[in-house]
Length: 189
Image (cartoon, rainbow, N blue to C red; front, side, top):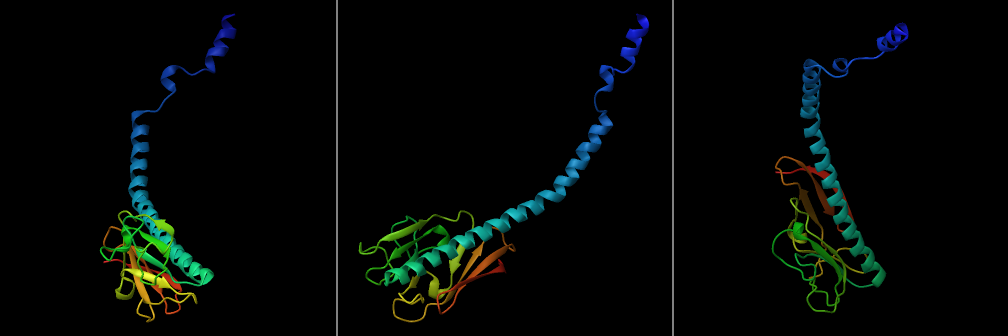
């Protein structure tokens, strides 16, 4: 009987053989630290790049909505800055939010009650979105699908979308004279 029990004990490990030594744990922690040091900054940059692409796409989708509704309805449709989701503002940047509405009285404001708000877009958080002179406050599409200023002139301009950090890659959204937006990468200052 002793011989049988000896054979059984030979294949089993004792408790002190089932773990890691302190040196093995320290090496594993060091490898993990090096991997995280290299990986986290590039992952953060990937997240920021994806956020910029998403926000630019959301703005371009709002422009496309305004354009298609103007053509479909045969009347001016406008996109304007709106911090409250119901009224247009001339203060601040586009990052505070914007609305798309049918501009019943052709004045690029949603304040008269004749226009109906089609969609409300919320704030962009820490990102900034600003437009140059022609598109600083609104973008207005007429029934032909072209952009047009309230005074009747062609409305073309550039929006710049930047993350909260300087020197990072953002997006430039250019609206042509025909009303079509194009997006490209830009370095933010």
